[in-house]
Amino acid sequence: MEITIGIPAYNEEKNISEIIKKLQKITNKIIVCDDGSSDSTGQIAKEMGVLVVQHETNLGYGAAIRSIFLKAREEKSEFLITLDSDGQHRIEDIQTVLEPLQTGKADIVIGSRFLNNNGKNVPSYRKVGIQILTKLANTSLEQNITDSQSGFRGYGKDVIENVTPSESGMGVSNEILIKASKQGLKIVEVPIIILYDGDTSTHNPISHGSSVLISTLKFISMEHPLKFYGIPGFVFLLIGLGFLIFTVNLFTETRQILLSSAIIGVGSTIFGIILIQSSILLYAMVKLMRKKKLKKNYS
Image (cartoon, rainbow, N blue to C red; front, side, top):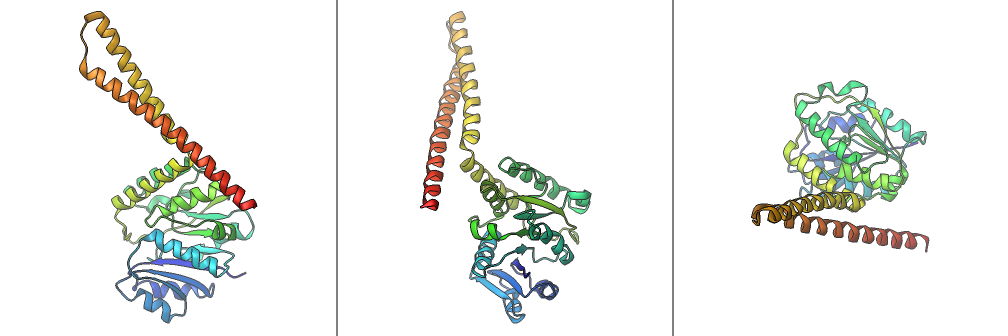
């Protein structure tokens, strides 16, 4: 049973050759997405005989994953394993990630850095960021996971054919999980070990975290508008009404209007009403779009 291995790569000429050599012992189907590298990453991969998807300019990690998904779909791949091109992922962990897919236990397998207490060698500031982003992702998933930002993953045929990433940045990791969970696809995790040689990540932690945060909030707001907008709207409405009641009571007692309290009360009430109305409208739109899509699938 042949598997496809996808590698998003940007300026990795120092590592790409060694990684491909090791992977070619496992499979002949290797897809490298050269995401606009300014070095010889793409050329080296081509000379080694693997499938290369070339981006003319650097489009981002998410765009590279999207290209790998589309190429794997074109190749009619049954299983797709993605891993990073910086040499931090162990090739011997591929079978660990692959096994739940082959046995039908999962549609997506995440190689988690935090199962079995394996996260000790993850830099502390990255660990905190990953945990925050993972907890945020868990609000839209059917089951809780420990490492939503792992690039070492396995995908089954249903995911390859039915999930199309759209995010160009690092938010693609959570996007895929949210879209897959929405379709009822099963996600499981397996423990892996990351080979950190210091902190070799090429991604700025602030821009990485911001990208994932914004992307995840966007998808949560689309999938759960009543929760995302309605709950904050209700809170603002209660705060506004509280300040208005306080202002009215103060006026009846002193015949004076506390301007700051009145402004907060009116502003919070209006903002709360707008959020609640928005949540209802967006919920109706999402339900209508899903109904049309479902009808189209059955027609």
